[in-house]
Image (cartoon, rainbow, N blue to C red):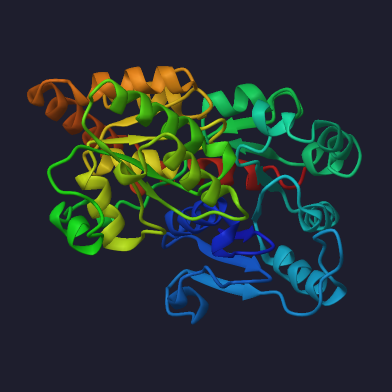
Length: 389
């Protein structure tokens, strides 16, 4: 089967959707499939893929000038049209892309079926942001994109429940995202995190925020919760790993100063690779008081590292996190997070180890690429078999 994935740009700043596309391409690559990833910017794509060194996976970079409103130009459209002609199924990513509307129209002309992954962009919180503009876009420009999709893909049932308000009835499907667990089979020692990030204090419990520093993620609430805990005498340090845009990161530093916990709040910047895994391993708890999160790779990376997770029902995968045995769901307020963190830091060591082992085992049993691959293969084959209709 020839599978064509399309995302207009594959840049690191595009966030978790880029990782989702890369992991989907990797998971779908089998001896029976040929995967093509089409994009105008391959800067975040694996070098081996771009160089054509990975069997079964190729990258098609669409050259030529684009158009306004995130649309493809004539030369780019001609290139993607030729790829669609050779594809059995096309997989589009994201909701608010003018290029996706163009590619969907070409698919319709070619009678090539496509699946659209909405990546949490139809969640209630997301739709509440600039709602009038988004609803107008859905009812006009994006109407055909949704109506002509053979399937609209969600990564969790909670996501589909929210998206169902906006998509054609019966078109939604749920398949979890695959998770590349290569770095989590043999875990590094936690000491590597302290060696790489000397500002983190050894011997003091770590509450870890590892995400983009953005108002949606709720770092302000976590800082407030940390201040409450220090006021109660609960020893810990808040480690903030990530970067952000604008003045929001600096505002969070000032908030920690205003609350009197600047000396116990460590802003360590962007962390990746083996250091990231070691940091997850070193943390006593990963906490994210987010307003909205789709799949949330970092939750499951944390569980795979043997670290418990605390988050909110703003996460589409909150039921799955609860099922893992190492995920706790709290109300999205500083007080609720302070209470939950204090409780989780105070559990007996044996109970903590039981939870950590349960979470790690759950991830490897439920989210490994080998397990998830079958779900996508079934979806693609079902869609391709109906291409004539």
